[in-house]
Image 1 (cartoon, one colour):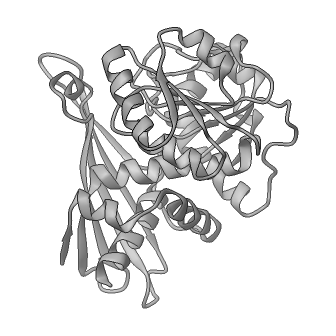
Image 2: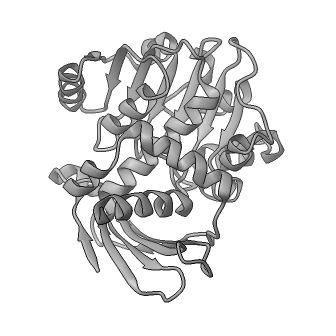
Length: 317
């Protein structure tokens, strides 16, 4: 069995390349049982969440694989300079169950999460979208910027974070990569400026106000992975054409959607499509330059499986 580090994951993938791998994975499909959530209560600070995410494809064929991610989400990690998401990914032979690779789950999650948003952007953002607002400056944020930039001509990036120093640190890093990047304090003004608003936070209160979205904007909501979290208000969902990564996950786990349904502002019938339907051409994405589109993801095991297989194959030579 191979052990593949985070640095090796980085060497195996590109953002544009993984977007295309995910496109093919969603077209082909896979078996992905609803992930398991287990709350780990802590005597001090916020509770942690243990996630188990299995998936498999072509189990009876030579090239089939079984995979499972075991991850822990510990929100208080940010206060001690550690990523909130930790984990490992186990990839196995689809016929025999033989372990093939143990992959750095934290890094794999960053790549597949960002590239799922990039995949959605390829269908939902305007073709000329060049201004990106990044809300949040954690480990996922630079991957999101690069994933969106692999699909649209992103030139200018503004970064907002609750801790301004972290926003400036990310902006500086992006400038070294050739982006026109600046840290900003006024989130509301930046929302109105952006062609794409990408959010990756652990917020439990809305950050993106729907009334401030301008026609043509694409909103990418990544961070609120449980019903008690949310990054947008009801008005954002009411004004937007709403899409999700998977219907089963988003309607049960996405706080932005669950809370809007509970308030009566939104119904799950209003979800236009998921990534399966978009990639297969069964449903249409953006239909006008004036539309406001919104993509909500909570993560899907098919994404981990596709990324894990890609890393394993690249590492195997």
